Image (cartoon, rainbow, N blue to C red; front, side):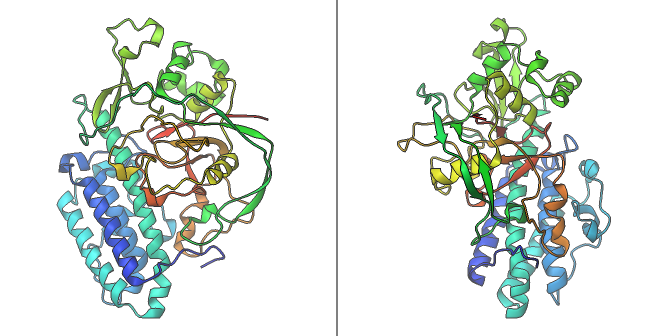
Length: 442
């Protein structure tokens, strides 16, 4: 490995337990989907559920079992081509936009593939010689975090698939929750800025793009105490936000015109109702993983592109925070991401929830609910070094043209997120659970 080291599980028993838990969660997330659901690809950016399940299995087979399993028998010789995602060093692969054309292998065969690899992985975790275990244990931890990323993508991708179905099917019948009428007002929390340190400190798993820890200078700034809500974003619509180029970056305004954007991705408008210029809540519903629901004004606005988040901030006379500003606020808030009230995948609601008052007086909703767009471009930290070998392609080669998001979402596993975690998407992307928190200052 390079200077950036992957985390090694404390014991083989702990590694085996974690392996089984992560793999079981993936299977559980797919359990309610029929074969027809799992093969559909609704746009180039999404992948079929079946493909996700096979790809994360391919990762373990290709990076651990094939080089380290002396007696391992490959499940199928063509799967390396079908389920490689973007690893150039591992050879050619099936084109991403055509993953939905893979009616074969079947969902059942993908399940057999997973079980085949699981048996071999459990055996090698338990029985590999110590020197071999030390070689692949870091890749095991990377593979498990990789699978958790795809668990989130399974949820966001099937949501997009179901949203294209005129029947508006539900992935799960969950108690999404309703407005309680006690939404906390926005407060502005002040941060003194100055010379700070950001990035992974070492100890525990982190991706290579979170390192090295480095100094950053911040001017004094203020951060909103909670996320922007549907009701607040609806005011932007009512004020002609999607019709006024003054609020938009040039590339964003071009997409508004080209693609006909007029609201967040999954909002639906009752065209037969006079909604007083767009501000009548009763005229709007929202497609969720529990089907079509009345738009909740107090829930965080979600499925925004960077361009929409930035336009709203401009309309408000504010801005988006930088990722360093967000990280310092998150660290100072000292939130335990493993317990409520943070709304993660573990809650099985799969939808952003309205904010609640916090007795601590600090920012709330820093973790879970929605990924928060920042104004920071996804670039390497000073001194960044990718991992050695095939996994050097994991993050570094994507550091161009994308923006950073922080904090996790309602589709993120709770034990997958941390204050230094850097997610990244292209500015037009909005099928993820992405929203915003406003910042103020120079």
